[in-house]
Length: 195
Image 1 (cartoon, rainbow, N blue to C red):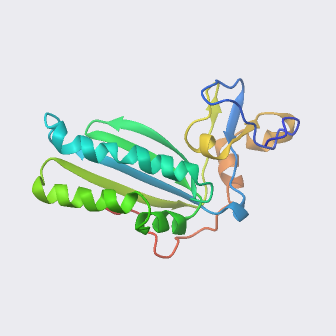
Image 2 (image 1 turned 135 degrees about the vertical axis):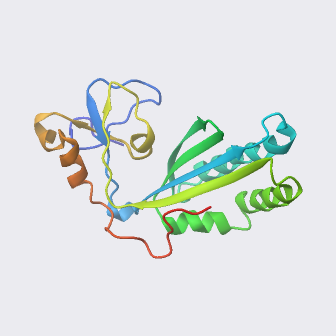
């Protein structure tokens, strides 16, 4: 839990409540892991055939619930969105190894859902597609003004900026320079994009 008297420490509030002032995301402690951003989405080619894509879409909710219940899963947070071609998720992970472990765990919900998707796409190859991209992030910068924490800040917590004790975080360049909680350079075996 955060110490509200120390402006350099993350400040937590109830989800969805707007914050007064300016904030940035709390940096990950190197002991907590690395920062991994995982994008995953669906491309719906036949909107008029929900019988061919709705089942695929319905599998993500239970996977997110499974991961969210397990504090050791490595999933720090996520947000959903809807693009022109279908839904997508931005996920924040604390370990590339934990992400890959979940993807290959035969006792978790992902493997059966992935096998089912592959069977269905062979039957109807032009109905729905799935894509993902994986990034290991050495440094990140963010700012949130008069808004509830979102994205990275919702996953890691927030730190106020613009106070006397955090004056060094006023500019984007300064926030990016302090955000070196992850060793720089690529993580072995981590693709920058995969389909």
